[in-house]
Image (tube, rainbow, N blue to C red):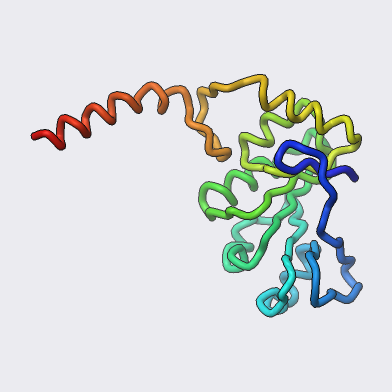
Length: 175
């Protein structure tokens, strides 16, 4: 499946490992959640990058003790109507402070790109290579958002209040 990362079509460097397949010592691997949780100590000693495919019906807080050793969390959208992975993404970014790659996988549609990005996703597995151009176009369509989000963009309210906050600091520093 084509992968969009940082706004462009890229090759997936992660090797997907099945439940019963051996895990190579070298190279980037993407493990199923069940496999990761069965032997979490195995990631600690791996020299290669390790990621996990996390189902949307499991609590992402189970990953908290492992996040500093994971370079990728792939959240699954089984159908376009099931949005639980949006909440998982926000939890990973805002509460658990995960800074690695957050990938949307499964039934990811073009009209969801902006919402996915705002939720904290920075990589997307898409159905067609042409979706890369659509993704870039979707992200450039809007430059101001009213709602705070996990993507790091400053909301319109924060932008508006920023000059006042700096004026207040300046007056406080003078006094």
